[in-house]
Length: 292
Image (cartoon, rainbow, N blue to C red):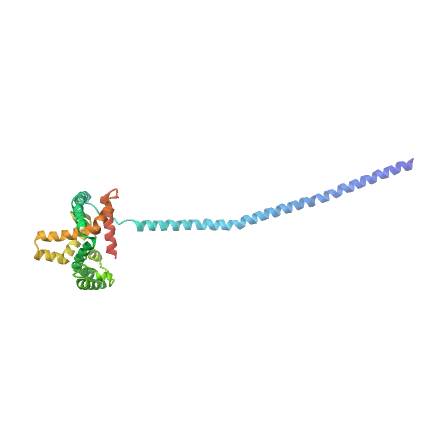
């Protein structure tokens, strides 16, 4: 009996020892798994931090370059605005100028246009162009001397050559072989440009009856050109005042019939304010010519 009790006690002790050994071994494995999880988590966080740090310089560069590019674009737009700004117009006589503009506009539509429209129906365009060539050739001294006054000696030589060629081969200037055959272009020079070349201020804007838009400088220029124009001397010495006026009037009507009338209408008719439209066109055109 004692032997049986002793055997049972030994078996229970061995079972407890095995269970105790098993319970001691299991906690040893658990920290290893937790360590593995911690390491993996740390690696993932490290990779995410590395990714963020790798992207950060690119964002910084973008932030650094964007304002510079925007500033450069703003400067370019400002420069374009400055270049596109029209020249300032001194127009203290605007009430008077508008009244004369209205008079000239009505004179054009009710008097000049009907005349040159009838003239167009009777005279072919080629004949009208030949008449313009003749008057242009006669007025050669205006362009020749203004080229000299402006120091454009090559242009003066071109005008002299054109006059010789057109007066002979071109049959008294009715044709322009100097341009069509010899490629010698007409030199657009006048006394108003000469005054601008020598630093004279343009002065105020002014509109003259029948003549149209001008400035103080260009008005003086018209007087200078008239003094150089052979037609002025012919009218003064050989024609009556009425005949001289008719001479100038015919030249003007012929020019209107070719292109000047259409140009005037293209500027004024679509405009909200025809006065300002014509003023702006004249000032910009003269500004371009004085810089040539």
